[in-house]
View (cartoon, rainbow, N blue to C red):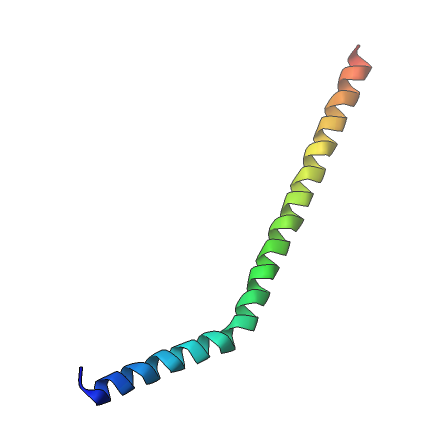
Length: 64
């Protein structure tokens, strides 16, 4: 590989790594936000399920 091609390749790799470092904080923030949205949704679904189950239990208790 000619020397200028190796230098160009090294520069491209360096720039790509620097861009990844620059993007990392935003990517991590998005990652953590997605995890929090999933946890919030799971918590809401759990709350709804428990409410349904409690309502079902109350109906069964009234019927018995």
